[in-house]
Image 1 (cartoon, protein in one colour):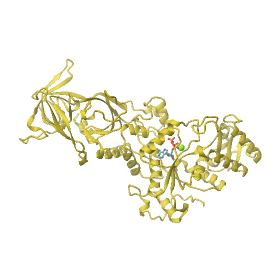
Image 2 (cartoon, rainbow, N blue to C red):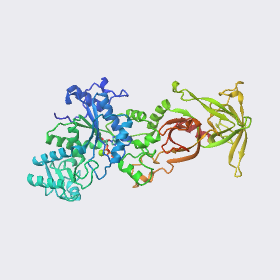
Image 3 (cartoon, rainbow, N blue to C red):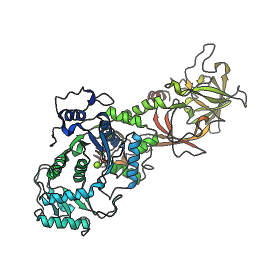
Length: 578
Ligand code: ATP
Ligand code: MG
């Protein structure tokens, strides 16, 4: 059955329920699938695949492809395979394979028993290459890579045929077998498809199908020293697996004629390649080549550095699979490239964490407060709500005593216009606690504020004054004696400009790394209920944002990553008051 190259059939009823995803919106790929189901192409089956090359960790761009491929399979009662496109042992490693498996699972998708590797098909792919040679459709070329490039021509000039193009079938078969046996050094010969050196599509100018590479493969070891190129391996792997819709990113549009050509020459089952626009994010790089450099050159601490757009980095930062899936769903599926805003991803993260994260109090930059009229040695327990968004989350007790910490930013000795929080002589509410009034400011010899002496009003327990007097601010706090020490890592964009990929000024993207992407606060204090908090757990630190326990946490010190700030109104208020 021949695939139609019409990527966007018209006259499709896109209001039919099967064409709509989680968001209820349709897209051009769903329209194609709906039409294929209607016409009985592929017998009504939907079989997709996610085909990562294990040469790096997955990033948020891959998440878009994962959500799309697995999501379509789920919605259409089809199947989605996880297939490693492991055809280049020079760059591929088991570490990457393991991380990819882990990340796809974490995102919430299941390939059941369909975990495949292109390397499983090496023998079949080789046999098909022999078939092409026998049909006069492929030949062994002795030109080196540089010469092949020169002979290829340009968009405006046709290519030149290789002097080796018209070898006999027998000579080609012998040479190809010798290539397989390891009789030639790397780079001395390749197998090329014999198509058309004058084709307007450069991908059809006798593309390379196999190259010699004496490298150990993570799965096949030293069994092979010739490896298939992506363009040759991919379509045939899709065919072997019975893929119906082979979804890839736009840069492969010009490769589709080659994808189709090989399948047609071999006369085997023919999936349909469909291209969509890849995800780009502002303030972010998403090319694996660049991400690997960030790791290897030490610009970040590793693939799972919370500043990385890798799924392992986002996970460590506290992003949830739900938030990432919602983000991908909101993005939709387009046919032309665009750049999404990181603010939209953060919006999705806030939406999800707002529902699920328990609220706690934490003071990032502590300022000591002594309540002069509170009995020394006394501790009382106040009720605090765990999650106002979730009635089932209940409440907890937080200790209150004579010595507290509040946020340095919540005090101004000379309050700016519109600053309503604590200042000398002024009264504010402590969250879940009492009204306190600042009576005295204590400073060290350098004039730095070291402590505030305040009084509290016992009649305001729980938050309101019986006499009806009002305060204009409520601030968070922790009780000094019971608070736990914590290190809090605040993250900002890793790049200082919206498009770090723009190299029009001739600079490398690393020139745009934001020097302030990480700020470590090592003297933070958190409420005692967080003792023993598990790595990966997310909390809302009231008034501050969402934070997640980092695996660097030890018995002595909790370590938190700021996942995302609260709604930006907070930043705005701070700016106008500070
Ligand atoms: P890079 O260009 O960063 O090296 P890649 O495309 O070579 O990435 P693969 O491992 O081959 O990485 O990608 C696996 C699948 O994920 C492919 O189908 C690819 O099209 C898709 N993919 C990769 N990056 C993105 C992206 N930014 N947006 C959407 N899909 C993507
Ligand atoms: Mg790729």
